[in-house]
Length: 168
Image (tube, rainbow, N blue to C red; front, top):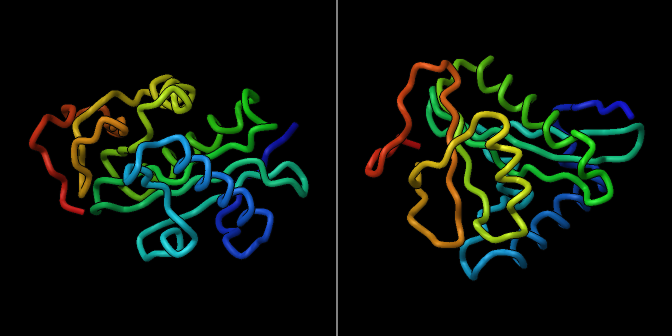
């Protein structure tokens, strides 16, 4: 299977359906008020780039990069269709987002994901790509339902410490 990652797709009904599944599942698998997945309007916000991953006419994955500052980005809306999991599609999307962040001159890439067992495969994927746990960043606050991770893209930044707030 060959996957093509294309920028955009937020008007495609297949992408919208996959995003709806992602949003519904994230909300169902996270504590009340702790789901931070973006809806369509949030994904259309300025400073955000969105990609969809395709195998022919089938959309298999989504992912986005949100600029928190000129040097700090956030991975958003990473989702792989259940039928396509375990085939490296999520990893391909994550590598694409990391490359886009580096190409934009960002020095750090962070993310928020769920702390519940449902999100364990996602946390493992991020860890395999060099992300490590960190305190909340940007506008996030401590939340037992959330896990925060970060990656220094230039290999020279020190990890975020508690109290570090990168302007968003």
